[in-house]
Image (tube, rainbow, N blue to C red):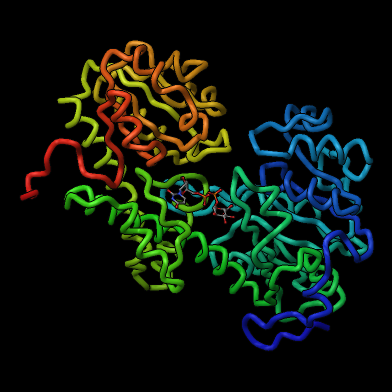
Length: 461
Ligand code: UGA
């Protein structure tokens, strides 16, 4: 048995130090849910030589996956899927009930509703479908759950026996999910007090292959680690963005300010990149989850609640700044470069770019957008949005361009030629992607988040 020596006890060196590629036995693993977490886990474990069954119930997605097509944008995953199908290490099933794998990884979505409550119905449905069976599989939840959820699943009978039940939260980022899978910065394994030591050893061995620090914790601790890690990242970006606003109004540039702050190793430089707001399906959700978990236990979670409010306020301020710079957006034609919540994905959930598109449309601007991956999704989500198939097409004849997602394409494009296409050479950069001196030399009026407006600030002596 791997002893629990209190919260966060590290594994013995023998397990923690295993080398990539797989050195343990080949396991049979079912991965339920083919979103970016499930699909990446499935192709990742197949590449390590395990026998993987990927379960996807949606018939269209199932068909696409079986022919090696990935239904979303995620670097390297299509190649890995094709290789895993060809080697026979991965097969695609339509129901969790069909699997006979010894380990079942649950990777289905747990979105929150308007009130902030996590919808656990997909997880519950998978647990019900697996049901009681012999031999009992090892069940590992990778989906994000609010603290206390596993206890509720036990109470409601969703999980009859905690001895072979684990939570191993994922820390993958969309856009670099496969790379993150292969080099996690830590592995957290949550298990119940009645854990079966053999099952625990199997789970630990499965994840020890990555050589990352491993922590064995309780189920509640695993839930809170996942909730808290995302909330803290969100908090850090909210802080950076709030400082960026202060810099804009103080005649300072936020770049050197955050560089100077982030050099302190107690603070660290990552997740301090200012933007006009953060999005995605995880960071905003986790702030709400933590605030709600606190409230349910009689605690006001001031810091996380404030970070969420700051994020919304920051996006509103950016929209108003565009409005001021253009002397009103009504009747103006504006190019929006980027719609995804960040580069490298076609995901538009809680995307600040889509929020901005909606705001501009609501204020009677004509919005011409381009995104290398998310155009189709966004045009269905924002009525009246005109989506083009290139950045140049979106820029033709517009009064201003806004950079809303940090796609490298927008940094590398020919801005000299773009200037000739635009009716007025205004660029407002919500991601601090471009070089101000270069843009000004090309004749643009260039404004960006975290730098003062080019008009002299009123407080400047
Ligand atoms: C996040 C976490 O980073 C992952 O560790 C976690 O596994 C994942 O959620 C999850 O729970 O599944 P993700 O939502 O893919 O990953 O995206 P991030 O790369 O963290 O970016 C989130 C948002 O913050 C984006 O809108 C991004 O543009 C923004 N951001 C990020 C900034 O504005 N500044 C930064 O410095 C970093």
